[in-house]
Length: 239
Ligand SMILES: N[C@@H](CCC(=O)N[C@@H](CS)C(=O)NCC(=O)O)C(=O)O
Image (cartoon, rainbow, N blue to C red; front, side, top):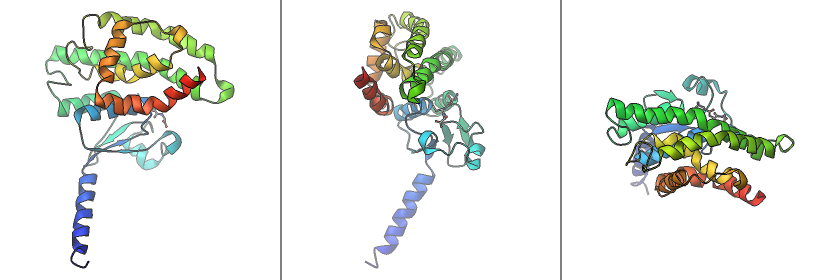
């Protein structure tokens, strides 16, 4: 017993050291922007610790958190030396540049600009339907409106049409290979296909094939589909 005591301390110190030296992501797992960062981390296989924050966990206005992210929003990345980064798109770009230059982050200026174009476009044009679906499926019951969901779905079709056209003859947004370009749009496409009322959902076969390719990726299963599953199931049950 006595001989093993220092070993336990050594082990715990080691675990703490590894833990403290780990990349941290602050944010509840089911926040759409947290999903974006977590899916990216999953693709890159980075050791990390995710801290439940925001939403029902609160902490957004905690002064220490605000020092990390003045917006009080999620996600926030924190490295072991205390360096922080917020804005999910910036987090994805940073991690892909740091850990996957020439793969998930294209290396040439044009390749990179092309990927970033899709990332910015997706962040601008996919957030709207997601927040309206969230409010109207899961917000206060007396404020839910099916018409608002249908209206948001209709407004989203123009962007899905652009994706549909672009994906004709392409496996992924930048061509043959999965890159960071696919992450922002892909992270919300699971909600688009599963949360949009069937009557308002155009076929978009190229987008669906791309979604199937994303869904075949273990990191997408873990950080997107699994995380959305409870809400997806609830919507399906409601019919
Ligand atoms: N543009 C920001 C938006 C961040 C954002 O609004 N995040 C949501 C969660 S997805 C949030 O912080 N909501 C408040 C909360 O969950 O407490 C980003 O992409 O990181």
